[in-house]
Amino acid sequence: MGAGLALIGIGFIGVVAVMLVVRNLLYVCQPNEVLVFSGRRRDHGGLITHYRIVKGGRAVRWPLIETVDKVDLTNMIIEVTVRNAYSKGGIPLTVQGVANIKIPGEMPLIHNALERFLGRSREDLMRVGRETLEGNLRGVLAGLTPEEVNRDKEAFAAKLTDEAGHDLEKIGLVLDTLNIQNVSDEVGYLDAIGRMRAAAIRRDAQIAEATAQADAAEVKWSNYMQGEVAKLEAAIEVARKENERRIADARTKREAMIAEQHAEVQALLAQAQAELAMQDARIAQVKLQLEADIVRPAEAQRDQAIARARADASKIIEQGRATADVLRDLATSYRGQGNAGRDVLLMQKLVPVLQQVAGTIQQLRVDRLTVIGGGDSGLGGSAGAAGGGGKGAGLGGLAGTLVSAQEQIKAATGIDVAGVIKEHVGTGEAPKKPRRPRPPRTGNTPPQGFGAVERGAPPPPAE
Image (cartoon, rainbow, N blue to C red; front, side, top):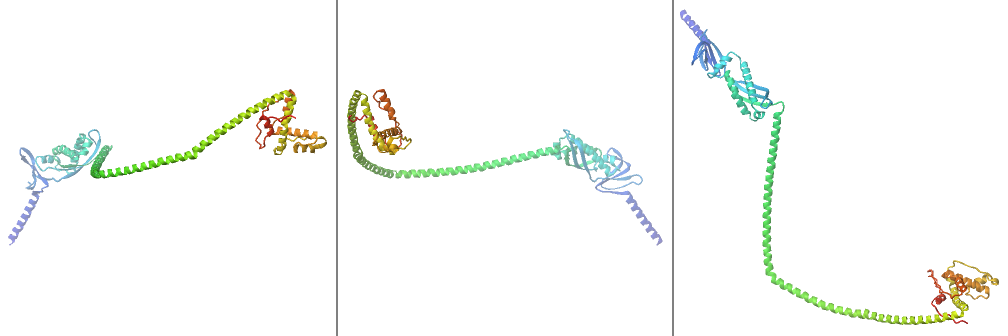
């Protein structure tokens, strides 16, 4: 009983010891890692190493001979940023990207990684990978223009992946992916290019829009024009049909219209002929009436005027001849009598003049008044002689009357009787016929006796 318990205890201890040994010496490799057993010499197809690699599965470590290291094969995300990297053309660019790198699990690349990174942390791996990618990124940028980098980022990333992949493989890293997130510059080159492209795009859009609008307007107006042309052609066709119909109607009605118009013309012609005959009769009647009312009386008046003019002319001629004979005889008689004949003639002519002046003196406007004393008769006698017609009793009254008459004649006619008598009597020549000036229009009647002397009337016989 006691021996059995001892055996059980020993067995249990043995099992526990085996489990502990197995646990410390047996390694299980995960799919995302690689186990490196270092310490024993190994031949890997001609390559002599002192380690063996276990990828997946399990392996037992030789105690005291081998050591085991785990290498993580998971992905490492690296942010790559390059500032002021000069591109082709000397334009500094800033590029930001994201890369995914890892340690390869395939032969022979894993040997490069084990030789360089075994026992180092992931931060060291990421730093080495970042620096390598940034160097390759600067090299790729130097061979590309900013337009190429910005226009085709995928091609840029592919070229960068191609160049950086070789360098990373040499150090035992694999570049899975590389994405360019942003490309910019501090001098505004890309912004200018963007504005240029935006302006070009807007211009192309406006041109395309204007072209589309022009095409639409052209199509619209073309359709409108075709519609209007169709309308006009339809209207022309309708008008042509209507014209043909009217022509046909006119042809059918032509004979009737011609006959109707001919009848109307004949009626108008007959009416015009009748009115013409009536007008001829009216003209003849008017001519007869004018001849009876105007022509015949005018001819009669003309004949009477001619006869009267001839009679007056004969009478005037005879009177002129008689007057001429009388004047010749009178002149001969006066020449024979001498100065006495002239005195008698003047006295004969003064008597009617004085009578005429005495009769019309009341109608004259008094511009001048001459008062002459008359001796015994006094002022009243002179005034009475001037206003009583020349019938005073004394010599003073006659003288006053003569002077008054002389002044009245001079005031009324402008003839100085005393001056005329003095001129002709003093020289001993026959008095010449005075030129009587035209009297002013005062409404007074000129003396009739003086006018008789001018017309050459025969004087009264001398006593």
